[in-house]
Image 1: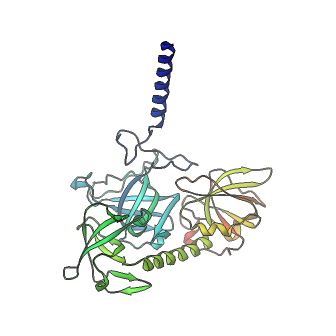
Image 2: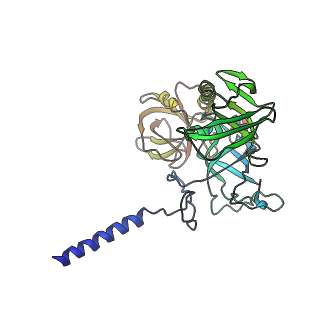
Image 3: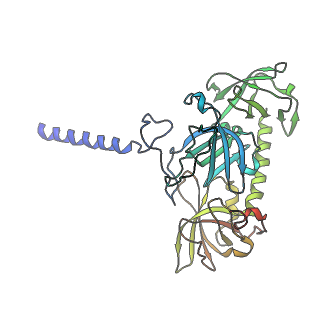
Length: 380
């Protein structure tokens, strides 16, 4: 009897140990203790797992919004030595990479140069032998993290985390603003002092106000520039009440909706059924969910072939229309909107293959000629 109990106990311990080992991550994470693990490597045709990206922040110093590429001047951190301070990192948005500005989806074209941004990144492919961007032979610690999953300004970053800044002191004579980050009424970190400028834009309700409207005790959001180079940074815009923040987000949302309706919903083809001529597509993240309601089941829809930068060739002439046979919810993953659609175009193009990128146009969206620089062919 005791022998059987002992065997059962050993078997149970073995099972628990194996489950625990299986649950351990196989890749490095920012909050993980094992720094010897490799970073997660992206797999073509798949969305990445949760918590697999690497975070860092920096200032936008160059952008090519058509190709969805940009350069950040990396923030200074305790993990750098002085030789790595203020160095650039050249990055491309992943096809399913999402951009947020003022709390709403955005294009790189919406973000002014100099804006401080937060991002989640993946390392470049192993076969990428392009030389790293450098300054006098010095390179950033983050130089290999060249593919971006998520990019957002300070406003969007802290709002997403449910955090806001509490004003501790306003010194207009010295043009200083001392604030403490808060979440659920509790301080997150220590007070920080930012520089105010004569050009700092103060938003209240739906209009501009002067710096004199800043008061101790206010909960605010703001965007900055020149972060970490000369202290925490210089404040470019401040939203001092909820109405102002909602107005900024609503304005950016309206701008985003126009942008997407003119260019189509971007997604990746999951499967193609040739006999039934059915294309299954999962849409990417970073899109206002309200736009998916404009793609109901049973309506006519058009599909255009796109590339990783989300540019199309000539959607006015080369898109293929057909019936939307199904619209379903799928499990959320990083980079995925959680919305999947099935469409039966009247013709299957060469670009309609699993893993390929497409743009989808609901019938209510007029397909208009895009600027030449946005189409494949003029600019590679």
